[in-house]
Image (tube, rainbow over all chains, first blue to last red; front, side, top):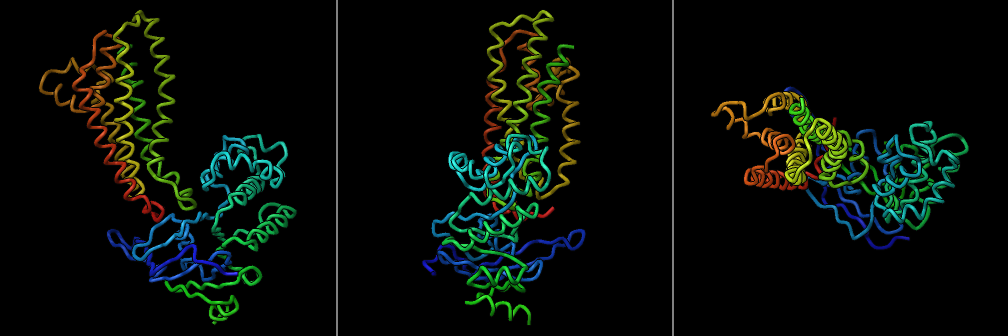
Length: 228
Length: 196
């Protein structure tokens, strides 16, 4: 199942400056000397308490932030953080927003236009697709966001706890689609607080705690340390 | 009246461009946490937006001036040159302020008040040429005061602008703009870590 390394963190440290007084700054270091290797086709489940640095880890992998020390080595793969409704603007139509959002997430304009039919079909918005976004309910907006995001199709997909949005029917369909995507041959990093989801989908467990990133060959081992 | 309108329309472009530029990165903070986008794009979008709003207003101003009896003449051909220089100037300032406000949000207040001060000394309510000498030269250090004066002398007074001065502002804007671009690229990945 596992192939060559596509993305690698080497001795990565990330710290944030946190204001602690009028002119005093404290340092908060969610990741310290972290090492992680992502192999092709792997599904990695990331667990850890709130504020442990899981989202920082994903942002680092996605190239949104750079480490303060150490290196993120990308072996020529397209990495994308799955996010709903990136860059949506209320005065544009659903279709235009979908194109904009897809482009922001790294697709070419023609690529996203070619996938428009699938987006329209999956989102099931009917006539609303050509109406401005401000006429949408929040559920409809989430459906459009989800349908667009799953079409982005990067080499490495980073998912931060979004399994199922919208009403009951769409929730079922979207989480089924999500699981299908994660089970495919794609490399996926999944952050979740839901133990059953991680156990069901992931082959490798990563526990983020006190700046340390510990990699386990099985998810169960990671959970047993996490619950200790 | 015509003199004031010339000044006000031209000023508005600078004012809206710089203010929109100053907020351009800050307002997209949410977006920056989700995807990587080169940051220099944001001030450019902001200034393009304010330019798109300025152009139709300027055309209306020209039509108004024609109604008031100022007929278009060959001096008006110099107006695009003024616009290019002003565009570069607005863009260069927007780059700099866009870079600063995410790190020091209070700079926004300084910018808003600074713009108010500049508004009163850029020769919008009065003509720079009515001010007597030592002060007139000092006021002309402000590129906007110079540009507004030149728009006015082209549109209302029918004369060519001071090309050397114009070229100097263009050079200055290019230098500031390149500096801003360099800094925005250097700090590119820091913006994702700023918390609001």
